[in-house]
Length: 323
Image 1 (cartoon, helix red, strand yellow):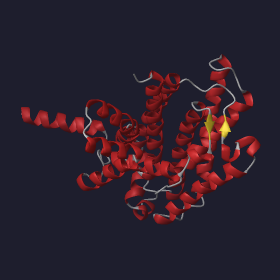
Image 2 (tube, one colour):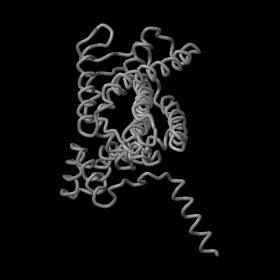
Image 3 (cartoon, one colour):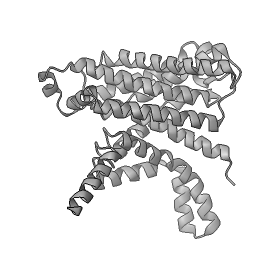
Image 4 (cartoon, rainbow, N blue to C red):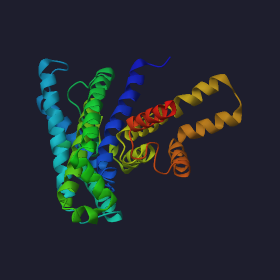
């Protein structure tokens, strides 16, 4: 029998990945900037929220806890957005591989700073321990769902706005966007700051739902996973970000529990051996999904569209058929 807390813990992880996927899609998918340092903004929000909550240490679920919770979320978003501003401005003239290398370097610098600077505050390489009780998994998941709704609505409205269309214009042809009179530099920085602030919000929830956060939680593999999520769902699609994040986030619990379930049903040695091998190396599933996606649908599951686009297209086809 699977513990209900474990189920909510996996669902919480999937929800945090959804927020991270949408936030990275604002940078990579909307504006076309290749950011490989997104995990650093996630970590910045996590550390900012943990340090803030440790400074006040309110009793869990008390009225003051929720006040500090709201302030901590805003603080994490602000500091992560500020970090995005500090990284985005110097990288304005960079594009493609050069931007990817610069943001990757920022992610590594973040880990080094957290490991070596002020271990009395940030915990050093051993990590920062939360001095208040962590959020229960079901409470954290409920809050995460609310954050997903807010982030999704904001991103969908942004995509439909003039600013969102300007983002996509930069993605398709930056020179043409400049000729049309768009302030490309400002729009790029705006995209970077918005995506970073959203990642900081996810980092705050991650910090408060764990007893310990460490620099090792924010490694390159996590960035690659988030990038794979938006590639799987479709760059530029908010719906694709959600679907891609859910698919990849649920792969880990599946490969963890499926071998045990299959082993209880059959003892056919080849099947059990293969499943145990996948359980020990879940990255094989990610690689398989990526190869399958590139082969069958290189633009992603949704491409640049949302689920409403498919629904409206289907409705138009039905209306034409009735005529």
